[in-house]
Amino acid sequence: TRRGWQRIGPALLETIGTYNCVNVLLPRDAAQLFQSEGIFPRRMGIESWIAHRQIRNHKCGIFLLNGEEWRSDRLILNKEVISPAGTRKFLPFLNAVAQDFVTLMHRRISKNTRRSLTIDLYGDLFRFTLEGSSYALYGERLGLLEESPNAESQRFISAVETMLRTTLPLLFIPPGLMRWVNTKLWRDHIEAWDTIFKHADKCIQNIYQEFCLGQPRKYSGIMAELLMQAELPLDSIKANVTEFTAGGVDTTAMPLLFTLFELARNPSVQTAIRREIAEAESQGPRELSKVLNSMPLLKSALKETLRLYPVGITVQRYPTKDVVLQNYCVPAGTLCQVGLYAMGRSPEVFSNPERYDPLRWLSKEDNSFKALAFGFGARQCIGRRLAETEMMLFLMHVLRNFRIDTVSKADIKTVFGFILMPEKPPLLTFRPID
Ligand SMILES: C[C@@H](NS(C)(=O)=O)c1cncc(N2C(=O)c3ccc(Cl)cc3C2(C)C)c1
Image (cartoon, rainbow, N blue to C red; front, side, top):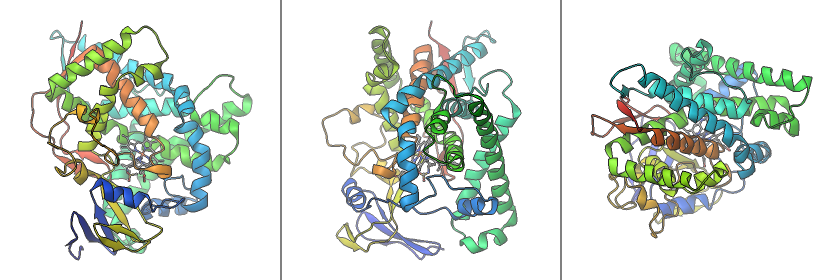
């Protein structure tokens, strides 16, 4: 029930359900909004997620926390999850999984005489991202890239999808009502959450049991580090690691699918990136983080993908003081959001916005407040480095081993089910490079 949009310049006052929301899409308005976020930045809560935690008596992870509770957990988690030191420790784990994905593809191609493989990668990418994030989090391989991936992990993957899909309609139903108005929707939502928590709990129990029997000498993942540091109580570690386990699947799989598709229909970009990868590797064996830092074009390709296909299509904030947006005085406490999808495709912000052109990020023009796909500041995506590293390593290994092609060059239609997804996954063809 939208009461209608009043256009206030390239910003919009929108009424969703029962609350007002100011939408902006220009970088300078985003800058203004973030400069008034205070030290406890806040997004709109997700009632159905909070309701589940309450019913099942689970603690909330940082995504759902606010104020001091959020900040104290976040500062402890940053050290293992997003800091450069933390990233360097889990980077080799992600590299091993990316190499296994290439092995899986070679194995499949060797099964046919055509020396090529045309495939809908949707399912494989979810298995890849779950395998990678689980290995980084628990130091444990799930075996999802082998011939017969185990059914329990597959159930977890579909539970994350179901949970995300049922979150969207529940967003617009007033919290008190949602459990009664559409019981099937609510029941599916809760059932999916229970499957998600059961899976995460099993992984956590395994590592906690070993940890009690003797502390591991070498690095064995983020969870083990958090247990050893003992700065967070066990139930907080569980709540957050559950969020990271579920939050690390679809969010990272989708941009990989979109990137492969764009590189398939922009062969000159694909070739330029392949050359950059070969160049980076020809400089002899170096620490992996140095190799990744010497591939600016590949990193820009990911930025270009997230410009056109932002996983979380908006970044929200409640400003803590009055803020001027588009010459309007927006009172403190008003929900405001930056429309990443609209910004990414606005000709006022990006020249030839429809063109997939990673070089635009390497030019000398001012790109500040234009790359906001991971949000901004102290409350930005804590999984940013995990996601970026996982995607860079995946693309480095895949592009070095295969040429990617696609039959349909037409734009992919996207749908928003709390995560931006393709309406129909594109078919991609992999051809080994000898
Ligand atoms: C899509 C985007 N939405 S956003 C945060 O920009 O509004 C997003 C970005 N990064 C992480 C997520 N997560 C999930 O997917 C997810 C699933 C289950 C749980 Cl228990 C926790 C999560 C989080 C919130 C980590 C979602």
